[in-house]
Image (cartoon, rainbow, N blue to C red):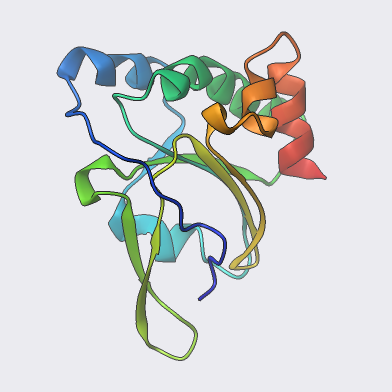
Length: 154
């Protein structure tokens, strides 16, 4: 599959509440759906920085404003990187798509937030879950926006 490395598990699930969704709506940029994934993210002529999130996730809520700031800054810089978010909670973390051979496949995202950089339809970088102590956790600090930009453009 094109999205290798995006299979992780998270025990338990919490239902999203309307007030939690409002946090994301304030920092909205390109909100895509599972149905949009193939057309937008896997487009061979595009670079996309994508955050897979769930509205109930506290780390995702903390990331939302920085994600919007990153999108604004990349736009100011004239970057062609598309910055988008995909709520995978309604599909239990599954994102179905069709591989280049026409086979139906799905990636599974269940550690939130998961950040992925796609170039020309292929996964270039993946950072899984803020709680894992990886790069995502570092984004929550004062240099969060610049570190996100580095991730998206390097």
